Length: 533
Image (cartoon, rainbow, N blue to C red; front, side, top):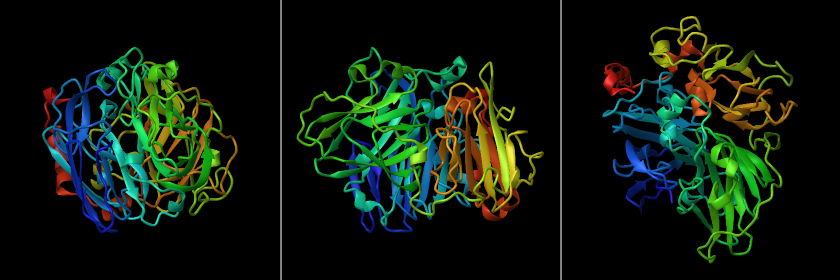
């Protein structure tokens, strides 16, 4: 079971999961204060022990995935991150990005190294203080420096809506229905970078448990249900490379939320989920009392071995079923595509209903060269030494002035932006692209050559297929520098990213920073080579 922080309206909750003491509070407008300690720890989630980078509520309780952080819609988070990393074989500075949260007026808390902040140096801490006034749904958090989150710094974050318009569809929605899907590597992130080749996942972990080919038969994740109840599962891909095809034998999955946006129910049998994406689906536990395989077939590495010996698998266990492996079989059935998904609230893309019907149109072409170099419009993203936010606050406003050169695009306020991604023959795809600070409407999906302006899927991560085009639209209503990047973390490390500098002239007037944020860069810049990476 995930350690978690869950807030019930007008109640004080105090629960213990393992060594974690969990608490807190209240109603709309609540404040959640929590400490996250970033630590190195020996861990063997698939039976192979390695050094990791983990988050925990205390220095001794680092876990994979990290503790569930949650609150109700309207919550204010005060999340103090303390870096206690010591292992020189991996990056020892850190940041934490709160994936999917818009961070309006608090770009400084977005957690992206060298875009919105300098990293937190080892033996230092930083308080992320931000409000979530109008979002609810399924999110997550992860390191956003180099490829550190592949080493384990990733965990779920949920914002509950007491007035959820689709609450009538399910009976259970709590910490037991948060479902994380991860790829896991026996090599450290620094070893993956040095190899400079497409990594092969050693294991798929469901809620932090899994097996690797030839490894021990360690326990798999067990998801418990009671016959006759309906469960809202919040599935999060916290993978750093692989996408996964997810299904549960004998059960259909009704998708009702996509990346923090409510959608009309869509019932399928199989969901392909890319790194960074989230889906809430309702499972109706109407099958005979038994054990059923949960399957998350990886796109790389361990995925080539299917489900043999419990690979890529977990167990759905009905109350009253024996403690035994399932004997069920799977069938492909209906596979989810983005064209099946339509927003529940305020559907329709901004702009005019034809290609190019936006105030500004950006064409971004993906590229690749050996050795291991990715490009956006022929430019490799290389992080600047001064965060883009600090550059803007210091007076830089134009693309010519903002670093890194060729990787920063300035956008005017309150305009409809259309971005066309062209996948070309870029290896390692499909490439899941994530835009910080916004959800967007996917008017042309990677799995469809037609356009939909009336009710396209709305989300914050969408795939760009090799040799295909993906088109998104959004409105620039959130001043600040926002990262747009491939969520395959090695691809980002090797340059597959740009920065959208939204209304830079307004940032100083609308965005807040803190004295602690001002101190991050001087502390980080004072580190000696021996204290890096």
